[in-house]
Image 1 (tube, rainbow over the protein chains, first blue to last red):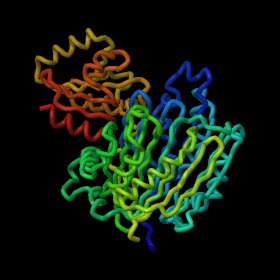
Image 2: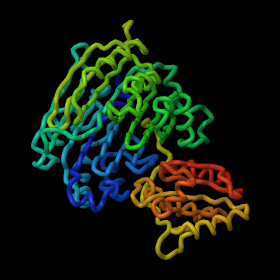
Image 3: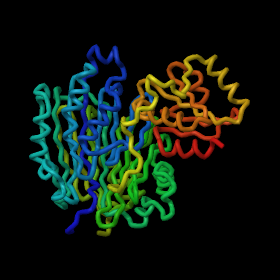
Image 4: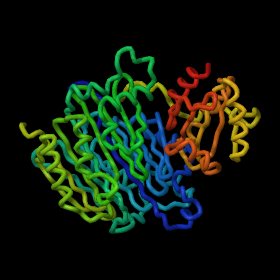
Length: 347
Length: 130
């Protein structure tokens, strides 16, 4: 393609801070106390802006012009797509946290493989350069570091890139993060994410609500409150808020470079919540893609092979998606990462 | 995505400055809120109740917008309630996500917006104030 389309694949940054200082006892809201102007300035550096937001007692969730930002008392997650400069946010965020008395504990940078890798600015043209930039931005106290590219043998152009740096060898993060990347979305399903003709009068908030309903995204997790947004002339983003659990969906529906992502943080053993395989199955069914990859990061949780197998069984049974590759790696301070690739059975 | 973003949040506006009294009313006591509520109930005035909290980032983000709207829509009553100061009222109105904007007319809730949804709030207030 001579002119690249919009890059849906996101860059993801997660920063975790120590919560056993005096700072958290005196200011239990931690990072949530960062004033909006400062956050806005950081996002400006990254080249994105806030388009919608919602919060509850546990965290703040922002929908950005290029994906999402989640602010917990001791954790920040930023996910940005397009040609954003995500890594420019590291230094200013560490600085803002330090002003609140919070010390950096761990950093994780991850992404899939870009659809238009040549359209990315430096350092995103090479993972080695990205790792260099991240490393330079982190304090030496984060001494346990690892970079890895997980490359499926059946599809080397869809690799999963991870860099982690941590002050501890083991993570105590109770949240398992699941990141689903989907391409070649079903064209009919993708149509839900185009603003309808004559809909220019309706604002992006109500158009977003309509897309959530039409696409069936509101059925993925009935408990979650959804903060959605529709872009002009097409495209969609949402953040789901369910207690202290976040979820997020971003869609680039254009044919030729269609992309959809679903991410959520959850506990595998919470009886009150549904089986992760069912949630993933419903999320992927919204898009009926021809290519799916799922990266699961176990954090402080012990790797559970049953979960991996169950996800593969459910996706095969309910969506006809066959697992073509399964890779695993362990990252100090971040835990086990499993990377699975799926394509439809008939292919 | 990647198209034009029509609504942006920023700290550009200078609404609700020290020199001008803000039209946004704030109540820290249930009793005074109740008094005000009963008063407005008698009129045909639209009341917008903004449920927020000091630690809620999105609430702080949209605050300049609310001040600006209060200045613009002078026929509408804008009230801000802190969910920590008035937890009973927050519970009564079933506030979970924040900010939550409850639009009330003649003592009845006619609309509710959850989240810092600038465009939707402005469009609904504009439509329902008559």
